[in-house]
Length: 495
Image (cartoon, rainbow, N blue to C red; front, side, top):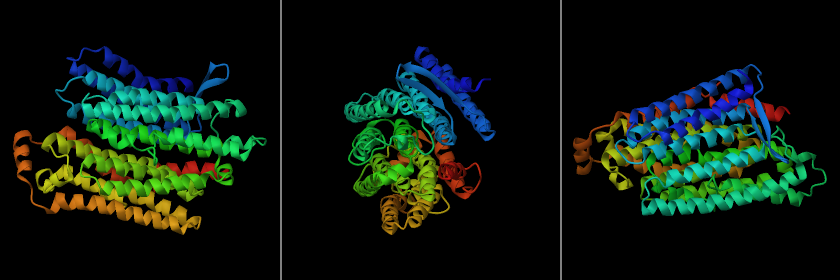
């Protein structure tokens, strides 16, 4: 099989199932589920194939002209595989969860069709080889995710969709302007380690700084950086599988991943540092981290709390990039994966709480551990991971970010990390206290007798919780997210 063919099959493994699902009559539930799962396992197979080839120095690339001045470029590197693996595996968990969550509801074909197209966009972003290709998939992601947010078509869902589109369309315009201006002076250059803008010796620092700010706004919208975050809490009007997808796999991770590409493979860390761009990024990250945590403290709704937690936690990735050093960069890249696994687990649990027991508010969690012990356990492990308690995956991320701050003598950043973890504990530990130490409410018992437990709502959450532990315990393995992040950073700083 040609290497370029594998790249096309990687994208087709979610695009073709989407088309089949759209064309399948809604009553053929088994056909839809088999199509979904076949696509998922096909994509995971192609990701593993690419991993194997990359380990044996295979080169995977595909390029063709889209316009006289721009090309579609698909290319695989270790960073691509880190993001593509995260997307593919979490797609499997979310699909199993969504099949159970949406059982006997309407418009499932529409949901799963757009869901599969969303995965195409996310994996396309991971293998985009230049800024133009990244922009194409970035906008395709907007077109596929807005339909998922709108899925229930309630008043709240419609308002959330309008807010989301307003933010992402405006962000897309900023991105487009930056792309056009950048390509007018640099040409259609592929992503490359160390960046490619350093060769523009005649470009003024002010020009490069202005383009970076445009890219930060355009891509940072999806990363929900402050003050461009408003769409994310609003989008919690969407069903739990959509919330899980937005926070852990698709939109916010696409924004963070895009900023990694911009800093390391468009500008390069040396140029970014000399222009003061990392200082801008550091300031945005710190403000967003603290703002998100403070806002989470004020929430009464479980999903809204988790949404503001995401606003805060995703900016840890930006913080690691801005620290300018190998250890901070490792922390950023490994948090891209670890936060995704922990956050999807929390949303799986929140959805199960609401679906099985109609629990949506924090004050309804009392005694849930006695009524729904496995779901409560999964939620607790992921929440402790978000705080950064060892030996969870979250501890590994924060440990490397702290090392990165110490490495660069940014002791005040250590204070920010400590304060953020304290705030994390302040909004998660009261939830765990309610779940495990307060008496169950009558509502729980009645709902339990009426509905019972649902294995396929709880199983993805339990697997996510287990991964949240295993990624911490086996972090030193060569093929763990930490091991892959170390390989990526070694290549970057060896350059």
